[in-house]
Image (cartoon, rainbow, N blue to C red):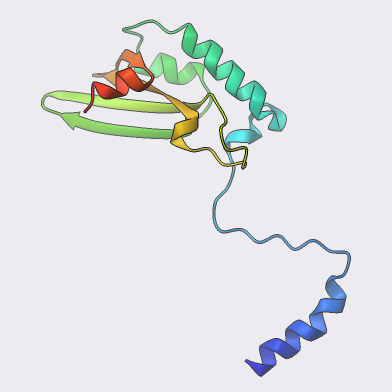
Length: 124
């Protein structure tokens, strides 16, 4: 312990004028899109979602967006449900994306059955 304190004391003058970044393992991949303009990303996602039609194919929808922030997959009875979450409304402005800042797109057997909270209620 004494050696660690000694090393820290000796290294401190060497760090003046430097920035030391420490990460807790969380990386913000979502806002790198559009050259770091997260507002444009969210706006574009909202525009794309507004143009979706019920019955749209999972792969074609996935291809028209950037990588989803979150994904879920569940089998219920004979049906397979896939949910893609896209950032659409920042609430926390902390640089991290949470599910409550996303709009879910819900697919049943690879066909879009809806989006938003009401579509998610279908899975419950």
